[in-house]
Image (cartoon, rainbow, N blue to C red):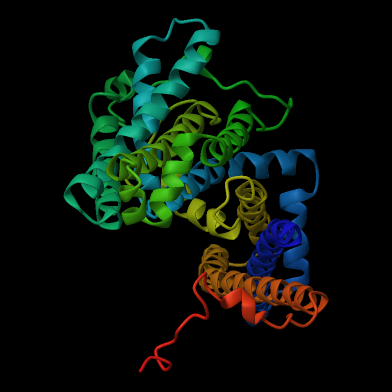
Length: 412
């Protein structure tokens, strides 16, 4: 029994490693297809991928740039992991990033003179609140009205974009833009007291990267080391069983989406106050601000096996690919559409590999249970042999106080 108990964590680790290997193979396959596309345009794919790696991981500045690009992916990916454990799907990362960015920006505009030691935590907290509200709405609709969370989160993305465009074209617009008549949809330069500190001088490695790492660690601790996290996972494993055990299923469902949204909102705050312009601006659509982190974060979470800690390296990998792809495009002079297509290929292959990863995990689980069953049977057989043949029954032992026990057949 002890050996089978020890083998379970080992099998779980092997399954996780196998899942990562499947995801890695998907990325390699996508890059091979991308190499064929680059060849078709008359460029050298080896030179291109060399420039990609150099642009992503070639030095301190490149590593810092990749980390900054990975930051929103890690926030969103960690939120996806939390939602997944309750068996809900959050596609609203884009809208939650915008909601967090808007609320944190309005806070910085309202109280710009607060000292940095107060204003920085405040704007980060308000970003978290904005995302939590935007994630809590579909959470409540799912829990209490049965509304499909995929539809509600996607629709709220559109609502967030329109609200974003309206606020930056009217109430939040830089007054100087109005005076000059240029009316560029952006805020004024936000308070310097709210700027996220640069941790490595001369790079873009700022405090937001550290906050993202802490968020992933806290999410892991919440899910596997707290009672509430256990309830969230229990609801995801079997809602009827959790309800029978007295757990608040609806509340846990709403909580999972709220936490997931809050992490997206925190990403939005870090994008605003860790940016080079230190102002919120729009190009009329979400991608100009979010960089598609709301969707790329889902891929990072899937590549990390939907585990908060494994999402850290997967986010850094995808952040590096995004940074390195731009360097490759400049170096070998391929169209930017090909770079977008390459990123799309990686997304498609990684998402598709998730099914294979689940099958691998299921196979290893079944094989492990069969091995435990065989091991238990092997232990029982020697025990039966060592006991020896059964002793013959003593006839007198079956006699009652008044003589032999009468059977049905011996009765007249």
